[in-house]
Image (cartoon, rainbow, N blue to C red; front, side, top):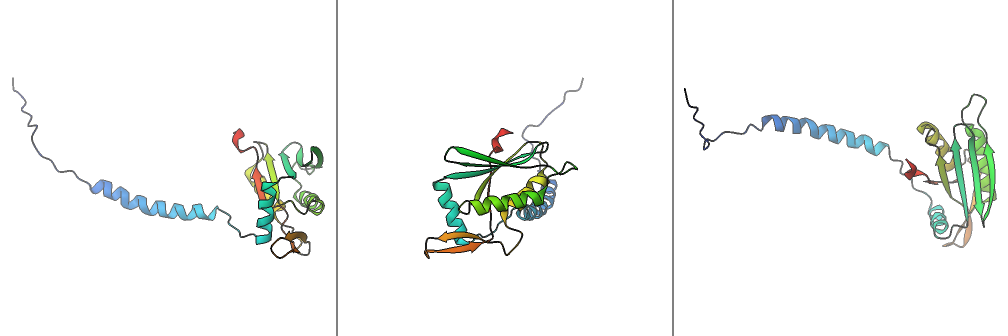
Length: 178
């Protein structure tokens, strides 16, 4: 019988070429993908007056406006103030889709009645498609008609300024539900 002799003290060279090849290919992929991530973020500058109004509303929320979105029941606009609640339903169209022009018109009326509110709470059901949530957010942000303006009191200047922003601050209320 032959006995195998293993030399435990032998040296060997580690070939790092495959690892370097992977790194050379991986770094450009990561750089390119990070450029696409930035496209998905919508960063806009709000007028200073609107930003101040949003901060004031966060500190002292007297009224809250919520949109409860259901693919079966439509969009319910709920206004809560001083323990009282009022609701306005924007029903679905005949084909079963959301009626975005009707939602926009209803939000215009809500904004005219509550010009000091710039934040809206969005409560979509889990089955609402993402594209519809984005369209709802677009309808709530600004008035489509540029001639429609809403008054905002500028505390620094001590005068009322007009803006076409309706509800630029959108808060997802049910984000932790799953």
